[in-house]
Image 1 (cartoon, helix red, strand yellow):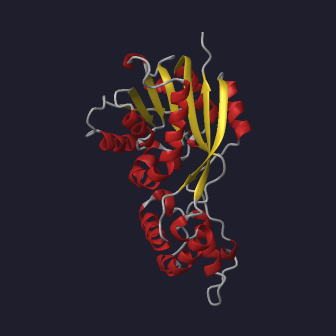
Image 2 (spheres, one colour):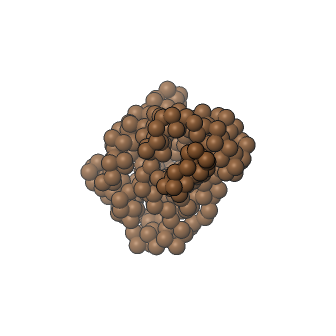
Image 3 (cartoon, helix red, strand yellow):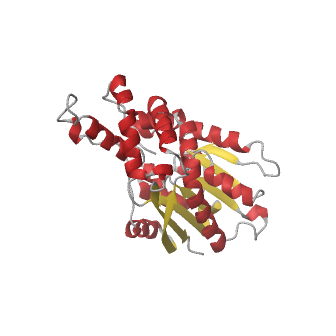
Length: 299
């Protein structure tokens, strides 16, 4: 999927738990909206169970899988992800559900589903929520979705349309302010740029449309979705940020290059900057998302 070590199966498996915790409240609503659109194009429940077969491509810790199975507990579904650790969490979140048909899981590279023995024209639906921007070759991943869909099948893709500021922006402002003070002045750090924890590719509607059409899809529909984070006080946000910063590889990258004493001394400044950027209860923290649906041409 990606040649970047920080985007490897091992990387994602190692912090699958914290990823699940951080994203389920944020990514659930756009995933649910995407499923509703797919259901309107090709209903999940209007045909015999044997005819509906859904691929959750890059399922992660299972947000989209759980949303679908909650509404359609008998739908046949295969959840794939590059990271076995993600699938372990998905199974732990779903194994005890009553009345659900079993969820199939399989480790798979979205850019080469042949490796996971996924044959042509297997699925009636493919859904991919917040996965393709982690790929080295996103058009290849979309082409693989097309390949494994049946003729007339539908696909839904959710992706970011602008880079996520997340923790990066208040931390960047924190470092710049902290090291601009008398007695702490550091000319390099007053121009500090927060790094991304992994390479991030975002898309505008024209890019998404081009990628889908080149793969062979028709009836491409794209709309914006504004996803808001769950309310969180500034004190709770500071506590969570520091816990993740010390434990989570994806957030720890922000702490790299600083001594622990400096990191701790910046706590009050981080709280101020978090409030300035997102407000109390983080009412201004949100993600700009594109929801794309399309159909594979019928025979």
